[in-house]
Image 1 (cartoon, helix red, strand yellow):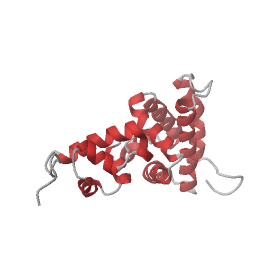
Image 2: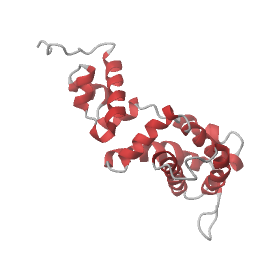
Image 3: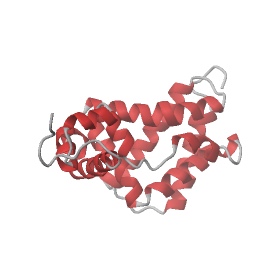
Image 4: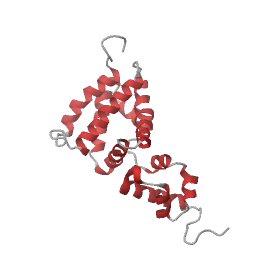
Length: 201
């Protein structure tokens, strides 16, 4: 059957065209309002090719968004100076990375979407806790690693939202070194400190 006129056939450049179109669509319209059909239209391909390469919109988003942290190497960097410095290392890494607007944009966009879109909220859970923070908490050997990961996630997403989205006075213009000194001990407690009034660490 001849293909529709003007449509790009499957080939060596098709995936790259879809990726470029998806990046533009997600940046322009956000996660909730981006559709596979719109991505296909911009890439000049049939929508079935988008699902062929990526499956769902969720998988497409994960594949094309330039996430500012590499989940596979995060723990190695955070633990480079030992467990006692992990909180400060995580704070410094997060704060320094988010100061770059280009690397911050995917996270702010994802958090905005997660606030109103269930599917985007699942993405945050998968990337932030399952792939990044829970493995880190387990490496440190403390009790209740999933709770520790969730507390760290709450701290970091709250920081991102308050500093860069809401721009809370006092926080939005604070010095990054000072923020590292303040946030680091909080993260250290969540990573290795005692949770609750009793029980082992």
